Amino acid sequence: MSEPVRQGRTGETSASPARRIAWDRVLVWFMRLVAAAWIAKGLLSWLVILGVQAPGIAPMSTLSTPAQAMVVVFAVLDPVAGVGLWLTSTWGGVMWLLAVMVHVLLAVLRPDEARIGLEVTGAEMALVLTYVGLSWLASREET
Image 1: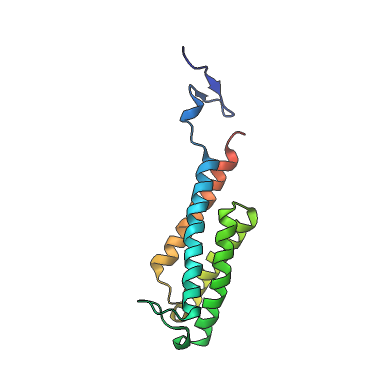
Image 2: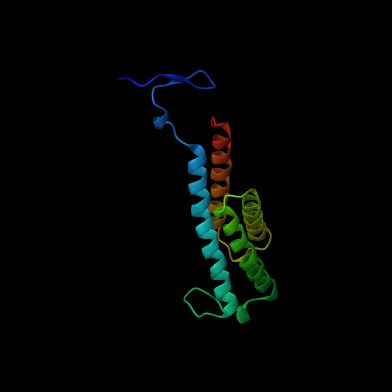
């Protein structure tokens, strides 16, 4: 028995609704993956604050005052953004975008203090563009 042909909003036909990509589901999984990364990023900031000795992590006492302030800001902002993204809430997306924009601005305006490479900044901007694209695709999806 053949499946019925369905017609979408734009007039295209689809023989099987299972073949279509559920962009809202892709967006949720993307947000959760980014959330895990941002929670880990926040925990790394807490390791610096707590003075945990690890390779590649400078002790808090050796950092300049602006660098210490950045560590504290991201120790709070990143986990909050990560939890909000994990919950797929609107405020989570806003907090994450705020965290990324602060990170990018610091990388551009204070590269010596921020110690953020162009690769990290480019990756964060690519994540933002992916988020915007997936949000747009999910909003166009039929309910």
